[in-house]
Image 1 (cartoon, rainbow, N blue to C red):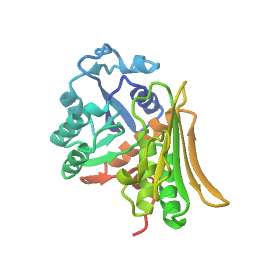
Image 2 (image 1 turned 180 degrees about the vertical axis):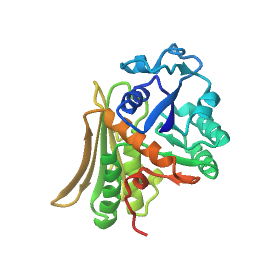
Image 3 (image 1 turned 120 degrees about the vertical axis):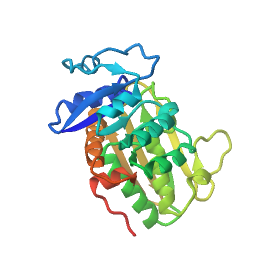
Image 4 (image 1 turned 30 degrees about the horizontal axis):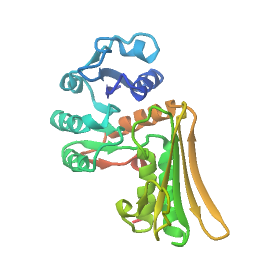
Length: 269
């Protein structure tokens, strides 16, 4: 039985993980962490997740939560990522970071933590999206440069970051397939007169309603188009994927890992 601490347990994903863990025989959520300002402190995580009480209450004591677990899953917020990495490094506990929207500076902290514990940063824990990212990388590498790349994503009205972490991961994969720097190739918005630049990777964002998550990558050539995409209809797939990855992570030595490692996808050397 692997013991899991869920950081950000009061959020949508945190609650989904608590529900999904009840259906998993070899994983048990032993701690749920929220902000010290959370109104849910002291409440049972099962009750918050809409299932029977678990006897585990929401706490803001990250250090104590990590002391109880074998692996941590972080779906809190970008502002807390640095503190989470530092705490997991100090406690020598592997961690899956599913939070998106953090700054590029945090990557240095990820690299530092990975020298001491197993760290998996996943913009999306869906197994289908994991494969989509690798298909995009392969398509970008195989298709001629005159196939323009456009990425569109849609999420619910409450999502804070844009483009989504998954869209950026898709863009990064496309850029890597073409040996480009995404920071230079990305066109996050177009307004007025904005002709397409050579090698540009475009992003379009939709926010509305209760859309769980849609991602489409268009490779538009002359006379033909290749469309790769993924549509999420149930948030539970992210929770199940996160738990699968967390269980996998408990047996790994210190290092930086990706969801493709979890599903056993081998990239080209």
